[in-house]
View 1: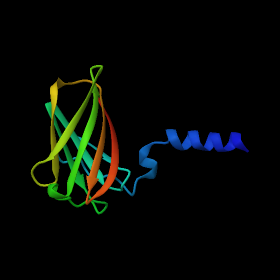
View 2 (view 1 turned 120 degrees about the vertical axis):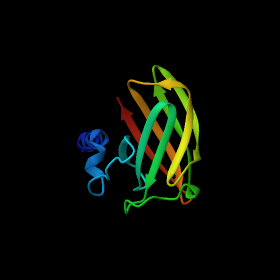
View 3 (view 1 turned 90 degrees about the vertical axis):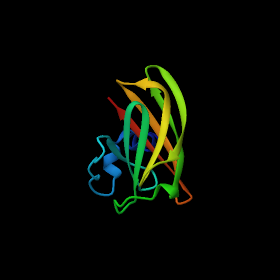
View 4 (view 1 turned 135 degrees about the vertical axis):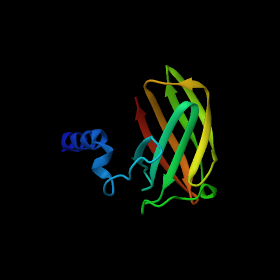
Length: 126
């Protein structure tokens, strides 16, 4: 019995995030990558040079005002690990500045607070 539970746990762990999504993701309108957060929000992440911008949409795929969002990003790029505080930007965006421009493979985990509730979203870019 324990072997079956372990197998199911591993299968769920490695299942694609899209298998749990609530419908098709919205289009990436800012040139980034869209992923669903653990709190049923959609987030588009854009990394350009040393700038990181996250655009947050609600479950209904409508923009969440930046004043209602906060958080931080943990970024792994070029073998370097960096934590960035994200600040409200224009519209439904949060912005942060990396220590140096990055390119290639980037892994980012955003820990956000949306309307006072915590949510997490993971990205693998490049």
